[in-house]
Figure 1: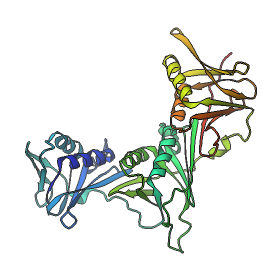
Figure 2: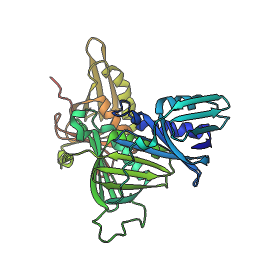
Figure 3: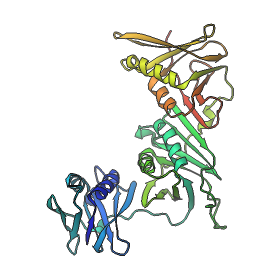
Figure 4: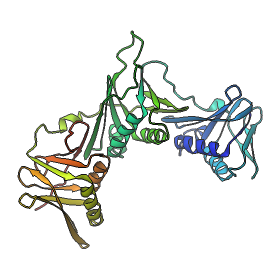
Amino acid sequence: MKLVCSQLELNTALQLVSRAVASRPTHPVLANVLLTADEGTGRVSLTGFDLNLGIQTSIAAEVEVSGATTLPARLFSEIVSRLSSESPITLSSDSDGQQIDLISKSGTYKMRGMSADDFPELPLVESGTSLKLKAEALLKSLRATLFASSSDEAKQILTGVHLCFDKNTMEAAATDGHRLAILNLQEVLNDDVLSEDENEHDSNKFMVTLPSRSLRELERLIGGWKEDDVVSLFYDRGQVVFLASNQIITSRTLEGTYPNYKQLIPETFSHSLELDRCTFISALERIAVLADQHNNVIKLSTQKDSKLVNISADAQDVGSGSESLSGTLDGDDIQIAFNVRYLLDGLKVMNSDRITLRCNAPTAPAIFNPFGDTKLFTYLVMPVQIRS
């Protein structure tokens, strides 16, 4: 193998695929990045794969001799990142691909690689369900839900985001048992790309739960794509592949049945409070300075006569504070407490100027929605019980 490529492009690609390299590999080759150079296409692909998450991208290169090898991801990445961006990089290997020479204006390096034959193949789905999604819609769904997924590996099914596709709509949901974020989007499929195989089951109606780790990497990738890019999704037997813009992400699905989260949302509410979202966030961020000193709890109470909402925090042995802001209350006065971090996480992903808080009791689930739209985005937060 022999090729010449840009230092900047190689460094960017390495930073990307290294995110899928195992930190504690079960096999030595999984600590490596796979390089495959193709003289015919004039491109070199880079792949990282830890058996759960796989990322592949490609860059343009002057390929003199096609070939493949694997190199230690961390060492390779650190060397390339420190080389001059003003000089192209030449990579060449011996016949078995285990001795690599890396030449730049800055200097010459030799690395020991491992045979590409030892590197596991990315599981590319060849049958099953396929969809073509608008990149912008997929990005919105991830940004609105990922933060609410659990980090507790004991609750494995909750460590991911649940995606439901039904014709041209998509519902994304994530919960950690204390809060729940649900986003509903219409017109998420790219036009006229529905399955043409009449014998295939309805490929545009299915559900899948994917690990948050994989989806965070997908979110980073989509952030660099164009809004009108199309993402191809392939799903079959516990494996999902996302493909767009010469980049591939593969991920295992999470096994198990996702909780029936819709039953947690009350049908009616006895209290409804309308607030300016940005003003509410600013007040919460200030009061959080104190709340962070002691269990993150803030108390929210209303004064219907004065049309004011009071937010307070009491950090024992440290201090206390309160803020007041205007709000429109429908129903009797309420007094309810929350983890301030949970509130801020949900409020910051909403795009509306005003939000609605609805609840039935200080210990019952509280629902936050963009004002005037209870179907687009729903954020449920379990209150903290207040001791009198």
